[in-house]
Length: 448
Image (cartoon, rainbow, N blue to C red; front, side):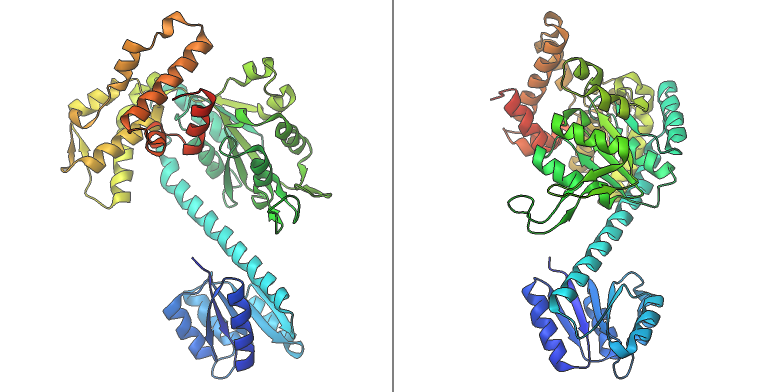
């Protein structure tokens, strides 16, 4: 969707020039010739940004600003002013304008100002969305399991520091959710939380995603891009699947953890940022260090505070409250009456081993809620026979441990593909994996 830019100026020639220039850059443009019509245009069109002349009839730019801040306090406003009215521009900034630019100006200069203002507004919205997501989700991190309670207590203590935290555990146990909680419990809670999946991108794209790149650094790098580490300054970056990071990137990340500085791809200047790192993996990093697949010095830098989240099968006493919270969240999100679980259905779910952990449990509940016509979920609404099939068909007792794990992965993926008619997207959803990651596993394991 194109960003909507409203231009308010009493000079028709300026309106025409700006309309043409903005449209060539892909913006949808609305114009207003005075302050009153500018306010009306905002009410009718809800623009993403306002370019406002400071001297207009009926209502001045300052008066328009004062009116906007009551009903649209976050709307970015770029003030246009002549050299002789810079003092008014300063007053406009005090009233909440985002930027000001003096006439006459170069079109490219104004376009750059607008681009930066829209980017900042996009980041502000992202922070708001993520914070709301944490506020609505992190309360689900509760437990009656003694080991899990110990982990949560340690996490809350560690959150008050700037120490790097390493989250370990099987896929689906809730490492992402705990990372968000750590951020929400920390003094950095009002800054951005940025997750980065280290396995979903190629090495080149991941490097650019983390560290950013300069214009012309590689083919397709038409503009400078800020990396997640730079964008999240003052906040938290969550490096998920850190165990899959390639050696060259491990070296760059190590340098950042040691000195809190990095170079953008294609850059020549070191950039320092204050960012808290939380990393997670389902791999055995100590074994990976022994195998030469993971740097020992990076492991020690990451392993300042290490928390291993137990699998759901080891804390089955948590299942009833997880069911209750998942049902409440799903029904709220779907805007439907509250569903309930029969005692026999709860008993069935509580006795299942959940190889996909909390993620699998939530997916099973969501599937049952979506397909159920009534509001009472019964045991037959949950098809949990895959574990029984695995026990019957998977000869894990006759293979070395690591071979058994690989064999089990192959079986689970084939079973998911069979259940979804070969659809990788649906199989990824069933398994709680990202489609790109599932495709990579299928290729690595030669699964047909």
